[in-house]
Image 1: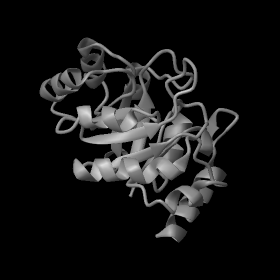
Image 2 (image 1 turned 30 degrees about the horizontal axis):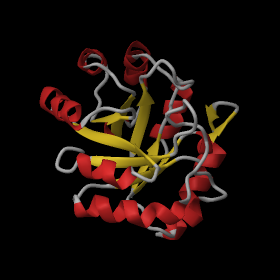
Image 3 (image 1 turned 45 degrees about the horizontal axis):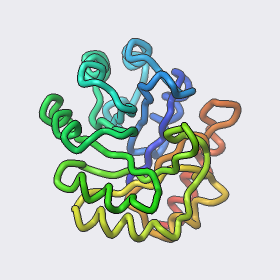
Image 4 (image 1 turned 90 degrees about the horizontal axis):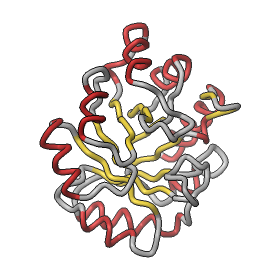
Length: 213
């Protein structure tokens, strides 16, 4: 299972995430996010961190230019580019061609979400299903109705790519989500206290995941 701890915004956050059971480390490179980090910050922290190469690094962008993505890649060794906005299939294809990286597309839960997933068939290397609230692209700590998860999983498996569920996952509700057997989970606020990653919440999540296996 993919376990992504996203929105790491400090050296201490990264230390906790790198020493956890997470498989993927998420960094947010969009300035409108409260979890925004600069590539210069990350480049400064990486040499001082352990277990860096043991994780898959995911960079989260919202409607970026190609130049913005390339500027981050010059400083940060990302493995996956996650497009969280209204990026088109053509743009994702260009990102893959220019970076030689895997590209994930965020699909926001909505009546037309499955149709949107089908537009990226053969291009997206994975999907993150999240909840969009108002003008926020995600990271709200709110979940969508998880009874829809099997529909997203079915479409992703038809495309032979992973489907990761995000939005409002925490130690109190994760078992309910795991009952639907998602390919991955993506957490930010659910493992934070006072805007910082919390070792106690991380361990609670890990215990629940292990119990479900």
